[in-house]
Length: 525
Image (cartoon, rainbow, N blue to C red; front, top):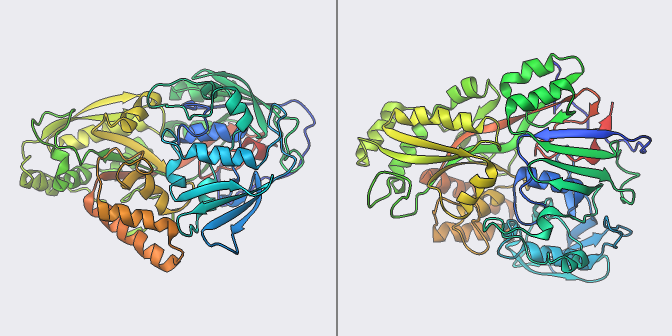
């Protein structure tokens, strides 16, 4: 098979000039949810945004932190609570407007508002201020040693464009709001938006005023991005030449694609873990058959459900070997990941039955499982397999699988009791997981925590991570938080994903662990 490992591939970064019109036809299972850069912290959404817009700092295809709209950054010599960012000069937006510090202040303040899906990343920020046309300061509540890591998907908007188009406020995606910024964009990125048909096609063209044109290949002058939910149709499009690049080759088709002349499969471990979330906090559930109480509020039931899941069977049968069973909801890339914890999930049907009986549910119960069918690799098939596994301990699961555009609002609006979610960690630090998934839901934290779990002492410890510059003490706190997360079992870890990108052999790129290709790095072989 023509499968190239991330570890053995070199990053392709030439400065080849644009010499001819080349189109990249790119497809994946699901579309971007919105073009509003702060409305949805979701992988395909931020991936499309990265082509059009830019953050201050970003990760390249090797995972390294590199300059984008900021050329340098450092803690202030005068105040340890302040990070100073020097901005790139001579940058213009796609409509020709000039980029400056005012746009950064506007964008970061916008990203801290209630409807923003990125507010957790800026929860420690007290003030963002311009100290010149091309210098900004971010002051935090105590020193924040990883602030630059939190900005890699924090896209910068043109303040004037936002004001002129009624886009000052972040789109309320969960509330069903549609806005100008949801379907239009004016970025500083390598590609500008030409047309947008949600769930049909998005067309981008290389921006001839891009500041990085001499630094990056910009080998493709046009990008046609098409969501193709059906796996067989997606593969057929690649095999027929209808598309050049798909991010999600179905595991059952890997050999077929890899053995086709002119096509490659390139693979790498992904910075993402897949898991189930459980409503452990409500007094009663809406989607079960137990009246007047919540079986998931009993940790013995939650542990029993985890023990019923056969992760090795999912790996071998559903994923065709293309997954790594998980025991914690952190990928191995992340600071705080623990090998022992990650190996802790075991299948024990008899032990699970005993826990169910001890909790008073020896006869089982029924519950609904909400699952996406166009977001993660074999997501619906994993859920289907889990239904049969949970039946072995008396839990009847009614599976409701739907597109991610309908699935994710269930979590945001707390309308699900048992659900699938996948989580990548662009900061490569456990604080990101804790802020979004473990901290109780508030106006600043816990926006993706649909478990209803909250613990005041744990919340306080999570918040303290942002200002702890003693890395040894900070890592000790991270370890203690993970112990609590494991003890509470509010999530059922399933596996770490493996990425399989399929493409024409002429497409020059390596697999990016975030599953977020930046087309400006691509070459043509």
